[in-house]
Image 1: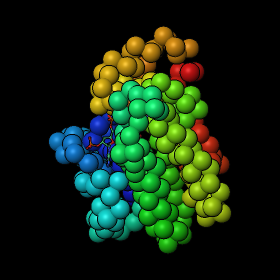
Image 2: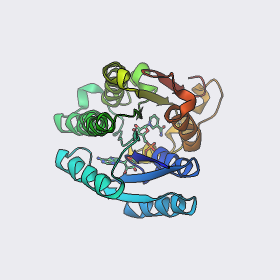
Image 3: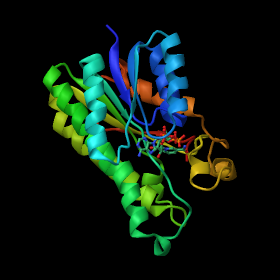
Length: 246
Ligand code: NAP
């Protein structure tokens, strides 16, 4: 039987690459997006061609009632949930802490932290009720340990919160065979850099990477699919670096 995987932020970048790969690995997919319906539809089309059943579910993860509605759709379509990739996230314009507004900090933490925790909460509730385990991968960032001073400390702090949440939640649910891990991507070629106001950011900083190059969304997807898989059956509470050594 195909497992059911929910991916938040599946319309672009790492989430889209993860969805396309997961479809080829035997998962049925609930594909969340916020604004980019066309992106989500293109992913769904490819996933269905690979044999997956798909559900496209719009929800802003910063809005708790939209998370509830998303899960209602997942329940109605699939009736179960085996895995979650908590991937939806944002950066913001380069700024120093002295320039950051309350509104900016609220948006960053509402999406990257509170949204991710609420999405995981609903997933765990379903996995516990099913009683046969599950796997969650939270998408963190190398920024969690680099701090991103002079760029976006608020983003780095939000990802550090995700790592701490990963460890704590993994301890809470390990006895129920629900594994919780995070990946920490480094400089990955996606549109997130353009959305943060600097399209060429990953290329500009590539020289700082020991491997001397940026990574692809597909390389992060490979790591996520490993952590979801039975090959990682004894891996929980871990943070897997996907950074080219940075
Ligand atoms: P991306 O290409 O900009 O994609 C972001 C995805 O998140 C989109 O599908 C977007 O949906 C979704 N999203 C954003 N805000 C949302 C919200 N409020 N509710 C629901 N979905 C929302 O970015 P990416 O590079 O793939 O990033 C994916 C994750 O990797 C993020 O958590 C990011 O922090 C992390 N990461 C990325 C890098 C990198 O270098 N790219 C490095 C480290 C960590 P819509 O477009 O439909 O709104």
